[in-house]
Length: 272
Image (cartoon, rainbow, N blue to C red; front, side, top):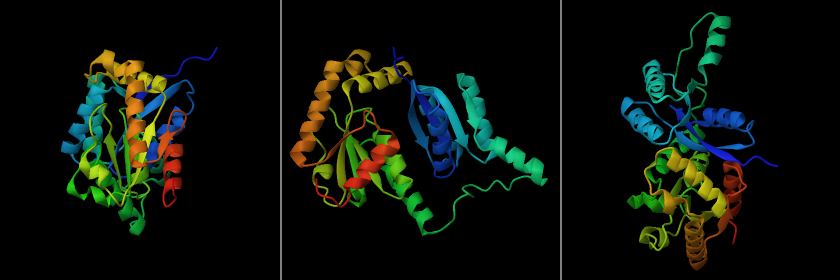
């Protein structure tokens, strides 16, 4: 018999793009085949105000916290708050920096984002990350037409982590939730430039992920949120909207974030 897959929250806090954390977190999570990480990625966290918002979100959906933050004051705040919440927190780079310091005989300069070359590609990724964070979860500023890709789908179809992953590659990505029997915003329907892609998953997987979110303290109504019959209706409504507007649909049930992103990029510039 196969052990049923469980889900856990994995919070990744970075003062740069988060690529280092993403690779480390996924490498570790891959060793646990019966546990799937629900990734929460927080890039460009460089002030206490930004960090306070992140810590509030972590408190609402507790899980493992990994971070690459070179500012010692911010790092200490992460450790102290996570300890108060009873959550594990790990500075991914600190053990490596300690070894380097011991061998080289000098402390690290602790420069934020020092691993990134400040070329056009770097600034394109930062611009894309800023855009994506400003257009997350249905936020529709007037510049939505500047998006390269817009992801739509019902709750828990990996829209946000996929958006952040694409942004890390310099692709401006917005994501908009589909809510049962609620019309889509005009700004989305009228968008001409962006590639719009619908994300779906099996009702079983979405129900499992939502149960985990509720147990983490999201404050939503449990019965309606995780009911599979309700989820089936939500998915059918989402597929209907995508079909009506001619938007391609990708099933993320058995795809990693990387695989979903690759499938989305394969659609760019191709008829569907």
